[in-house]
Amino acid sequence: MTTQTSRHQPSPICGPRGRPLLVPIVLGLVVLACSAGVQAGRPDGWRAGQPDRQRLPVASDDAGGRALQVGRLVLQLELTGKPGPVERYFEAVEQRVFDNLDLLGPDDEPVGSFRFDAATGRLAGYVRTEWRADFALPRVDEQGAVPAAQRFALRSGVALPAVEPTVAWDGGWQAWEVRWPRLADGIAVVGDGVTVAVLRGGQLKAISIRERPLRPAPLRPIGPAEARVIAERFATGSIHAPDLRIEAVRQAWLAGNDFAAPDGPDVESAELRLAYVVRFSHSVAGWTERQVLELYVDAGDGRIIGGAETS
Image (cartoon, rainbow, N blue to C red; front, side, top):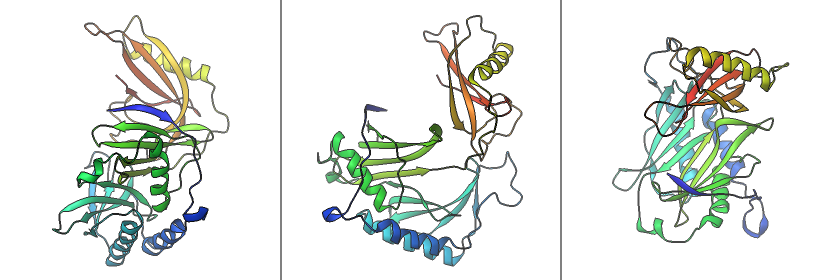
């Protein structure tokens, strides 16, 4: 559970004496070298309803390139360890292929794990799995978490969204979680953005980068009033609750799902669409709090493309 959330203004990150670091350029060259020629997408023969992950072969050149990337990231992020074998998977939830490899300690036990987008070669995430006593030393507080997270992002070659980050303490990870949400045309992209977790001792705990493709925005989008009517009509026909009411209507980029069509594919859409999120609530017998659910209305054609229960 995260608490103590606050907001900070983004600031530029520079190296010693105010000089911009060249790490993104160096890492970019490595990415281009090791991802050239990689074709990553839905494997031939995959169908909705099959396992969410499928193991794929990895060419020796690709494996060598990933090891080189990890070696450079270990130095830039002040990590320790050596890269393990590369495992390539198609992941149905993301509709993409990822390369995963562990960072191994002196006894060849994992001390961390890297994840790369196989098509672009870009870092998709890292998480540290080891623990040392110095990770808990009180070196970084809430105010220091943002500049520390910015440094780790820059050294990873990750571009941060030009938005105000939020900071929250994660008691499970014992780390400050700094998150930059992704916006497109000023509208939130649900689930996307950059998150960096910084341990109290100042070390990197984890980094996650998610930027999924967006479907072009509709030329003539419907308005919020029309989206409200469409969602209300669907909800009243599906949910038999006399006190059903609309709590809010907002726009967002999101993935469609099978919430409103149980016989549909059990995998979210690969592309995110511009939609209206219409939030409802209603009482449930025996519950002290109202049940909350959301319906997603496509901002282009007005179809219900999914939804979620949020409580």
